[in-house]
Length: 71
Image 1 (cartoon, one colour):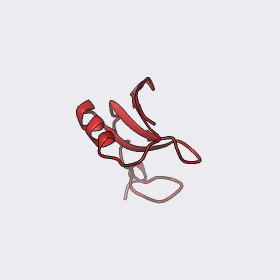
Image 2 (tube, helix red, strand yellow):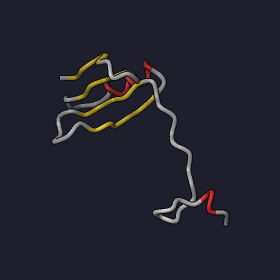
Image 3 (cartoon, rainbow, N blue to C red):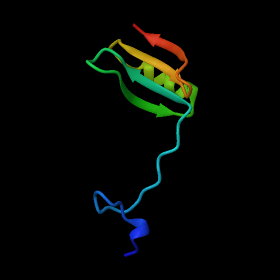
Image 4 (cartoon, rainbow, N blue to C red):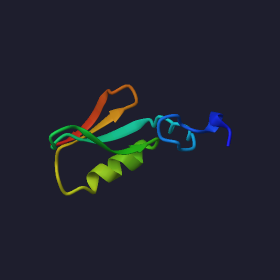
């Protein structure tokens, strides 16, 4: 196999990075903020937030601008 397609440190095949999504749902109630969901569809992100039965979520856009919170 060509070394161009192998990661040097792990010996795994190279995989392209995932594209950045337009919106991130972040859970802030834990010890560290954690991205739980990424999507390009704002309505999908809002519906996902509405279906949760717990609080501590933030919805942010690609630049990190806060769009919504679930307290």
